Image (cartoon, one colour):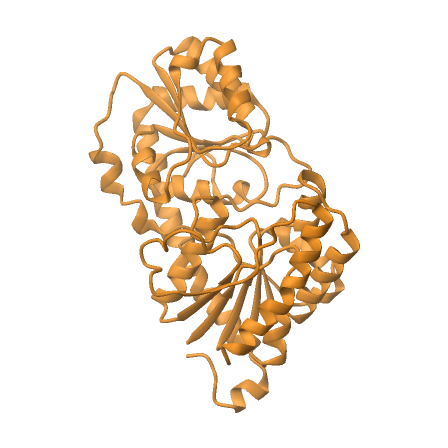
Amino acid sequence: MRIAYVCADQGVPVFGHKGCSIHVQEVLRAFIRQGGRVELFTPRPEGEPPSGLEAVHVHCLPRASEKDAAAREQAALAANDALRAALEREGLFDLVYERYSLWSFAGMEYAQIAAAPGLLEVNAPLIEEQAEHRTLVNRRAAEEAARRAFHSAGALLAVSAEVAEYLAGYPETHGRVHLVPNGVNPDRFPPVLRFSEPRDRDTFTVGFVGTLKPWHGLTILVEAFALLHRRHPEAQLLIVGEGPERQRLEEDLASRGLSGAAHFTGTVSPSEVPQFLATMDTAVAPYPRLARFYFSPLKVYEYMAAGLPVVASRIGQLDGLIRHGVNGLLCPPGDAAALAAALARLRAYPGLRRQLGEAARATVLREHTWEAAVRRILRLAKATQTLDLVAGGRELA
């Protein structure tokens, strides 16, 4: 099975360390494990391919380097011509799979013309996200590009119910939206690692993994940790990752006299994450109350795969993934006192920590691996094949 994987997003370094990068890498690996011969089309191929992706053939798309926002948008739109030409040059594919990006539509239009299954993975309402958190000059052109991609896709894969609801607002998507949440590769997080790492029983380590951005609720985490540390001064905070909020968080911790109790790792490679998770006693996803919570958080799946007890906000997809008191604990979003109380409970009861962690890992092994997600994706691809494609003898294996 020959697969074209398209990631035309200028902000996604496909072999990098960001969450979106890990997402791309894990889907690629799962395609390969299912027997796919994958060709990757991207403007951000820098760096060495991670383990397991050395055989992926990479096609470089134009990189938009303009400093002016309007010029960058035009360059990203123009890159559709290069993508279309690259796909046509490489011949027929059994599947065209694309991670939706703001200005890209040529991948899905190529699949439609070539009578190949075209699947569009949608991770976020990118137009709204760009307008709210970055700069969007030509919203009309962004909407037109989205409609072209949505119209041409054989199926649209939403990572959360909230993204599926967003897609349903476009007439072009009618009847073709499918919910396929994110997953995890459990082989990266063997349970033996967690219980074989040296542990200091005189401390209680609260951990967070991810990019340090406002919507991750890290100010809430600092406030909750301060409440916990006031009663339990042996508590430690470990923040794994880097981002624009780091300086503000460090200043907040310093103002509370907690600098000595907190450690920031900075940027780490994906291969290092399991070792850091193994040093934690609990891991948190302290999202604030957001008007639109459309995430399918990779960090939470990774926490659970590592056998960690998770404390997360009762919001969006997390409210279904985590069953309170069964495979994790849930708190009202934005409630630092409730988060601190949940952490104190886990500190007091090591047996509960182990029970929740074991149940969390069992949940992801049973329901949320990348292997299972890609098997579903391939079934959807097969279902979207046209009669012409089947008649031509190119039906998916």
